[in-house]
Length: 84
Image (cartoon, rainbow, N blue to C red; front, side, top):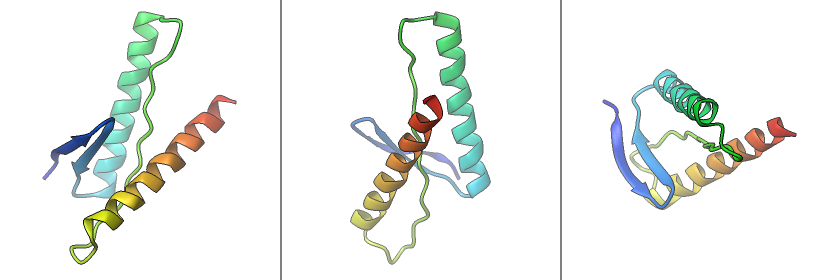
């Protein structure tokens, strides 16, 4: 089952059953941002960084959030590296 579980600031936590589902979600969001940027031709570009982690029921929520933050910043570094 998929769905938005919560939003924290600019962070959104999703429950996705499969890694392939997460990849499809990421690609759709990236495509939507690209389409918006193309359609509006603003002097800046909107973008998003997306990171994914797996959670074990025995893992504390704080550890999950720390891993998710790490993956988010890895995705951001990768995206910014692609802009160079």
